[in-house]
Amino acid sequence: MKKLGILVSGRGSNMTAIVDACKQGYLLANVEIVISDNPDAEALIVAKERKINTIYFDTPVCKKPGLLDTSICEVLRHYEVDLVLLAGYMKMIGPIVLSVFEGKILNVHPSLLPKYGGQGMYGVNVHRAVIDAGEKKSGATIHLVNSDYDKGKILAQKSVIVDKDDTPESLAKKILEIEHALYVETIQKIIEG
Image 1 (cartoon, rainbow, N blue to C red):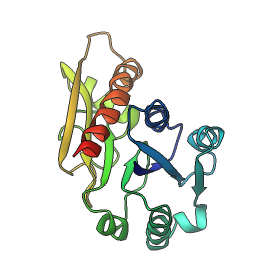
Image 2: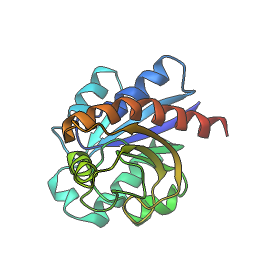
Image 3: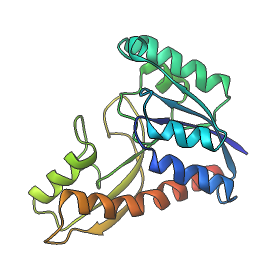
Image 4: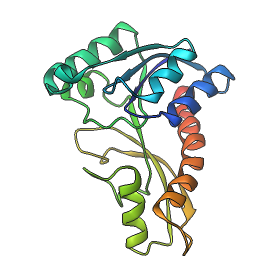
Protein backbone atom coordinates (compact mmCIF):
# COMPACT_ATOMS: atom_id res chain seq x y z
CA MET A 1 0.00 0.00 0.00
CA LYS A 2 1.43 3.34 -1.06
CA LYS A 3 1.27 6.23 1.38
CA LEU A 4 -0.12 9.48 0.02
CA GLY A 5 0.26 13.04 1.25
CA ILE A 6 -2.12 15.65 -0.14
CA LEU A 7 -1.59 19.43 -0.14
CA VAL A 8 -4.70 21.62 -0.31
CA SER A 9 -5.72 25.26 0.01
CA GLY A 10 -9.49 25.17 -0.60
CA ARG A 11 -12.43 22.80 -0.82
CA GLY A 12 -10.42 19.83 -2.00
CA SER A 13 -12.78 18.07 -4.40
CA ASN A 14 -9.83 16.25 -6.01
CA MET A 15 -8.66 15.24 -2.52
CA THR A 16 -12.10 13.81 -1.81
CA ALA A 17 -12.04 11.82 -5.07
CA ILE A 18 -8.63 10.38 -4.14
CA VAL A 19 -9.73 9.52 -0.59
CA ASP A 20 -12.88 7.82 -1.93
CA ALA A 21 -10.85 5.82 -4.47
CA CYS A 22 -8.60 4.59 -1.64
CA LYS A 23 -11.55 3.64 0.58
CA GLN A 24 -13.27 1.80 -2.29
CA GLY A 25 -10.11 -0.19 -3.01
CA TYR A 26 -9.61 1.27 -6.48
CA LEU A 27 -6.36 2.88 -5.40
CA LEU A 28 -4.01 0.57 -3.52
CA ALA A 29 -2.99 3.43 -1.29
CA ASN A 30 -3.88 5.28 1.86
CA VAL A 31 -4.00 9.03 2.45
CA GLU A 32 -1.75 9.47 5.48
CA ILE A 33 -1.79 13.25 5.81
CA VAL A 34 -3.57 16.30 4.40
CA ILE A 35 -1.54 19.52 4.66
CA SER A 36 -2.92 23.01 4.13
CA ASP A 37 -1.68 26.57 4.09
CA ASN A 38 -5.23 27.69 4.93
CA PRO A 39 -6.75 26.92 8.35
CA ASP A 40 -10.23 27.52 6.88
CA ALA A 41 -9.86 25.09 3.96
CA GLU A 42 -12.98 22.97 3.53
CA ALA A 43 -10.69 20.08 2.65
CA LEU A 44 -9.41 19.96 6.24
CA ILE A 45 -12.97 19.48 7.54
CA VAL A 46 -13.63 16.70 5.02
CA ALA A 47 -10.33 14.98 5.89
CA LYS A 48 -11.05 15.15 9.64
CA GLU A 49 -14.55 13.71 9.09
CA ARG A 50 -12.89 10.79 7.31
CA LYS A 51 -10.40 10.27 10.14
CA ILE A 52 -7.38 11.41 8.11
CA ASN A 53 -4.50 13.21 9.81
CA THR A 54 -4.43 16.92 9.03
CA ILE A 55 -2.12 19.83 9.64
CA TYR A 56 -2.15 23.44 8.57
CA PHE A 57 0.57 26.02 8.68
CA ASP A 58 -0.52 29.44 9.87
CA THR A 59 0.38 32.83 8.45
CA PRO A 60 3.75 33.31 10.22
CA VAL A 61 5.03 30.04 8.74
CA CYS A 62 3.44 30.61 5.32
CA LYS A 63 5.06 34.05 5.02
CA LYS A 64 8.52 32.46 5.30
CA PRO A 65 8.94 30.23 2.23
CA GLY A 66 12.03 28.48 3.63
CA LEU A 67 10.29 27.62 6.89
CA LEU A 68 7.17 26.43 5.08
CA ASP A 69 9.28 24.25 2.76
CA THR A 70 11.16 22.66 5.68
CA SER A 71 7.96 22.19 7.70
CA ILE A 72 6.08 20.48 4.85
CA CYS A 73 9.06 18.22 4.15
CA GLU A 74 9.30 17.19 7.82
CA VAL A 75 5.59 16.28 7.93
CA LEU A 76 5.75 14.29 4.66
CA ARG A 77 8.81 12.40 5.93
CA HIS A 78 7.20 11.78 9.32
CA TYR A 79 4.26 10.07 7.59
CA GLU A 80 6.65 8.20 5.24
CA VAL A 81 4.77 9.46 2.19
CA ASP A 82 5.49 7.78 -1.17
CA LEU A 83 3.60 10.25 -3.38
CA VAL A 84 2.79 13.93 -2.83
CA LEU A 85 -0.40 15.11 -4.51
CA LEU A 86 -1.38 18.73 -5.00
CA ALA A 87 -5.15 19.23 -4.98
CA GLY A 88 -5.81 22.93 -5.34
CA TYR A 89 -2.70 23.90 -3.39
CA MET A 90 -1.98 27.56 -4.13
CA LYS A 91 1.67 27.96 -3.11
CA MET A 92 4.87 27.16 -4.96
CA ILE A 93 6.51 23.94 -3.75
CA GLY A 94 9.89 24.72 -2.19
CA PRO A 95 13.30 23.36 -3.21
CA ILE A 96 13.67 21.01 -0.22
CA VAL A 97 10.37 19.20 -0.88
CA LEU A 98 11.18 19.16 -4.62
CA SER A 99 14.56 17.59 -3.91
CA VAL A 100 13.45 14.98 -1.36
CA PHE A 101 10.37 13.95 -3.37
CA GLU A 102 11.75 14.45 -6.87
CA GLY A 103 9.58 12.71 -9.46
CA LYS A 104 6.97 11.91 -6.81
CA ILE A 105 4.96 15.16 -6.70
CA LEU A 106 1.87 15.40 -8.92
CA ASN A 107 -0.48 18.26 -9.71
CA VAL A 108 -3.74 18.56 -11.59
CA HIS A 109 -4.21 21.65 -13.78
CA PRO A 110 -7.50 22.72 -15.42
CA SER A 111 -6.23 23.20 -18.96
CA LEU A 112 -4.41 21.28 -21.66
CA LEU A 113 -0.88 22.26 -20.74
CA PRO A 114 1.38 23.79 -21.93
CA LYS A 115 -1.48 26.16 -22.83
CA TYR A 116 -2.87 28.34 -20.05
CA GLY A 117 -0.39 27.42 -17.36
CA GLY A 118 1.97 29.46 -15.25
CA GLN A 119 1.77 31.89 -12.37
CA GLY A 120 -1.70 33.32 -11.87
CA MET A 121 -3.29 30.68 -14.09
CA TYR A 122 -5.60 28.81 -11.75
CA GLY A 123 -9.33 28.26 -11.36
CA VAL A 124 -11.63 30.64 -13.18
CA ASN A 125 -8.65 32.63 -14.54
CA VAL A 126 -7.74 29.65 -16.72
CA HIS A 127 -11.27 29.09 -18.00
CA ARG A 128 -11.78 32.79 -18.77
CA ALA A 129 -8.51 32.86 -20.77
CA VAL A 130 -9.53 29.73 -22.72
CA ILE A 131 -12.92 31.23 -23.64
CA ASP A 132 -11.46 34.66 -24.44
CA ALA A 133 -8.98 33.02 -26.83
CA GLY A 134 -11.80 31.24 -28.67
CA GLU A 135 -10.43 27.75 -27.99
CA LYS A 136 -12.57 24.85 -29.24
CA LYS A 137 -11.39 22.49 -26.52
CA SER A 138 -9.84 22.55 -23.09
CA GLY A 139 -9.38 19.92 -20.42
CA ALA A 140 -7.30 18.70 -17.53
CA THR A 141 -3.63 17.81 -17.21
CA ILE A 142 -1.82 15.72 -14.60
CA HIS A 143 1.86 16.61 -14.45
CA LEU A 144 4.92 16.19 -12.32
CA VAL A 145 5.80 19.25 -10.25
CA ASN A 146 9.12 21.05 -10.65
CA SER A 147 10.41 24.51 -9.78
CA ASP A 148 8.40 26.24 -12.54
CA TYR A 149 4.62 26.67 -12.39
CA ASP A 150 2.94 24.00 -14.54
CA LYS A 151 6.12 23.13 -16.48
CA GLY A 152 6.73 19.59 -15.17
CA LYS A 153 6.50 16.49 -17.34
CA ILE A 154 2.93 15.85 -18.53
CA LEU A 155 1.67 12.43 -17.43
CA ALA A 156 -1.95 12.47 -18.65
CA GLN A 157 -4.49 14.72 -20.32
CA LYS A 158 -8.18 14.55 -21.11
CA SER A 159 -10.13 17.10 -23.14
CA VAL A 160 -13.63 18.54 -23.24
CA ILE A 161 -15.36 20.57 -25.94
CA VAL A 162 -15.71 24.29 -25.27
CA ASP A 163 -19.25 25.17 -26.35
CA LYS A 164 -20.10 28.61 -27.76
CA ASP A 165 -22.35 29.35 -24.78
CA ASP A 166 -19.84 28.19 -22.13
CA THR A 167 -19.00 30.59 -19.33
CA PRO A 168 -15.87 30.27 -17.21
CA GLU A 169 -18.08 28.68 -14.53
CA SER A 170 -19.75 26.15 -16.85
CA LEU A 171 -16.39 25.21 -18.35
CA ALA A 172 -14.94 24.79 -14.85
CA LYS A 173 -17.77 22.38 -14.00
CA LYS A 174 -17.15 20.29 -17.15
CA ILE A 175 -13.44 20.06 -16.48
CA LEU A 176 -13.86 19.23 -12.79
CA GLU A 177 -15.97 16.22 -13.80
CA ILE A 178 -13.06 14.75 -15.78
CA GLU A 179 -10.30 15.90 -13.39
CA HIS A 180 -11.29 13.56 -10.58
CA ALA A 181 -11.23 10.39 -12.67
CA LEU A 182 -8.09 11.40 -14.58
CA TYR A 183 -6.16 12.13 -11.36
CA VAL A 184 -7.18 8.83 -9.75
CA GLU A 185 -6.37 6.83 -12.93
CA THR A 186 -2.94 8.47 -13.20
CA ILE A 187 -2.12 7.77 -9.54
CA GLN A 188 -3.13 4.13 -10.00
CA LYS A 189 -0.89 3.77 -13.07
CA ILE A 190 2.05 5.14 -11.04
CA ILE A 191 1.30 2.75 -8.18
CA GLU A 192 1.21 -0.16 -10.63
CA GLY A 193 4.56 0.96 -12.03
